[in-house]
Amino acid sequence: MMYTLTCDRRQFVELIAKRKPLRVGDGCITEDLERVALSNDEVIVVWKRPAFDSFVFPNAIIVSERSTTEFLAWVSTYFRHIRPFTAHCRVLTPSTARLAMHSIESPPNLNLGSADVGLIVAEAAAYCVGKTAPSRVSYSGFSRTLSFAVSESVWRYAVSQSTYNLLLDSVRDGWLSARKATSQPSLALTPIEISEVWSTLMDSAGEETLVGCDSGFVGALRGVRKGGLASNDALTQLFSQLENMRSLGESLGGPREGRVNAVETAVRELRRGPDSTRKLRAFILGFMASRVQPGSLDHLPLLFPLAGELPQCLLWYGAFAGLSPEASVDNFGDGCGLLIRRELGRSIHWLDRPSCDIALSELLVLLGDRLSPRPVLPTLVSGTLTVEIFPKIATSVKWLDHVDESGGESQKATYKGNKLFSEDSRFIETLTELARKLNENSMALDAICRNFGGPVGEQSLKGRKRRK
Image (tube, rainbow, N blue to C red; front, side):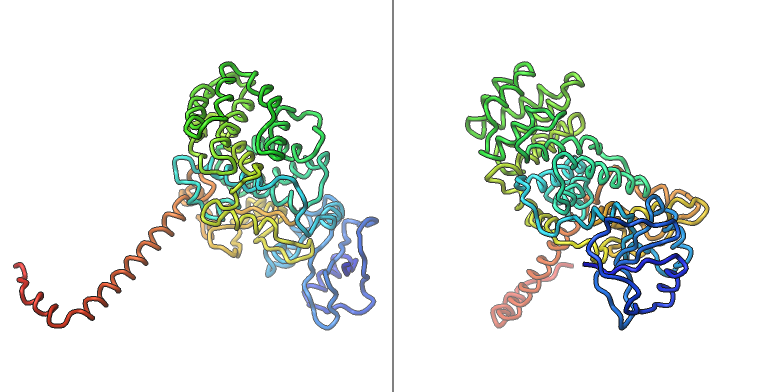
C-alpha cells in the first residue's frame, strides 16, 4: 500500500517549497502502478504512509519514461538547497518503479550457499595482489566490488534464470558508469569476466542448463553444491580438454600436501595457452585450488601468481569455496564475512529512505555540466561517495571533498593508482591497536614499580650510578 498524488511541476514546486501538508482527498491509496501514463510535465508523488497533519518529504517521485535526466536537471535548478535530491527520495520511471515494487523483502532460497560472499572476497583479492593480504581488507573495500552489487540484486529481486541476465546487465552497466563518471582507475578484472562467472553460478542454482552456458562448468558447480565434489563425468569432460591435466586431476583425492603440489604444478602448466582455452584454464585452476581445503578461502595465495594472466581463476575459487557444504567462507577476515552476509540480507523496502549519498542518474546530471564547477556533495563517510546504481542496489567510489577545479595536478592525483580501496586501512588499524596495548603495558609496569618500590626498590636505586 502507498499514497500517491499526481500533479504537474508547478504544483510539485509549491508542495515542496512551501512544505504543505496533504489534505484529505488530494491523493489516493493504491497497491500498484500497472496502468500509469504520464505526460512530460506530470509527476506522481509517492509516500509510504500519508501524513495529513504536517509536511512529510516524499519517498519517491515517478516521472515519465526517458525523462529522468531532464527532471533531475530541472530539480537541481529549483531546489538548490536539496542537493542531492536523490539522497532523500528515489526518482523512478513507471517501469523501474514496477520492478522495484515486486522486489522481495525476505532472503530467498538461492541454493548458492556462501558463493556470493566467496565471490566478493575473491574479487577484492584480485585487486590487492602485491599490495596487502585479503584478510586485511576492510568492509568498505569489499562493498565496492561489482560482486557485492550483483549479490544485492540476487538477494533483493526475485528474478527467474531466464530474466536474470537483464538485471545483471543493468547493475553491471550502472556500476561501471559510476566508476567512469568519478574517474576511478581500471581494475584487474573486467566487468564482463565477473558477469560470466555470476551467470554460470546462477545457472547452476537451477535444475536445467540454459542455452549458451557451458554444461561442464555448470555440472561441476552443481556437483559441489549438492555433494561437495564434482561428478566424475563433469571432471572428465573438463580435464580431457587440456593436455597433461588428467593426472593432476586424479591427485586431488590424495593428502593435502599432494593437493598443494598439484595446484602449484597446474599454475606452472596453465599459465600460458591459447586464448580459446583461457576461461577453461581459469575454471580448472579455481576448482583445483578449492579442493586443497574445501569450503575455505585460506589458499587464495596459491593463485596469486596468475592474478595477472588468469584473474578469473580467483573468482572460480571463491565460487567453489562458497558452494561447498562445509563452507566456512562467512568466517573470513575475523568476522568481515559475517558482516557482508548481514548487509546482503538486510530487508529494504523500495519506499524506505535511500541510504546512499546520491543516485547514479543525478550524479551523471551534476557531473555532465562541464561549464559548472565540480559539485560539493555531503557524504556520510569522508572521502567516499555511495551511489545507488539501481533501486536498492548501491556501490561506493572514492570522492574527495575538495579538488582543484582548474583540472590541475591535484585533481589528476585524486584517484592515482590501480586501487579499489586503500590497502593501508587495516595496517593503520593494526598499528593503532599495537600502540594501545603498549601504552596499557607501560601503565601496568609503572603501577608495579610504585607498589613494590619500598625499601627494596630504594636500595636498588641507591646502588645505581648514573652515567655521565
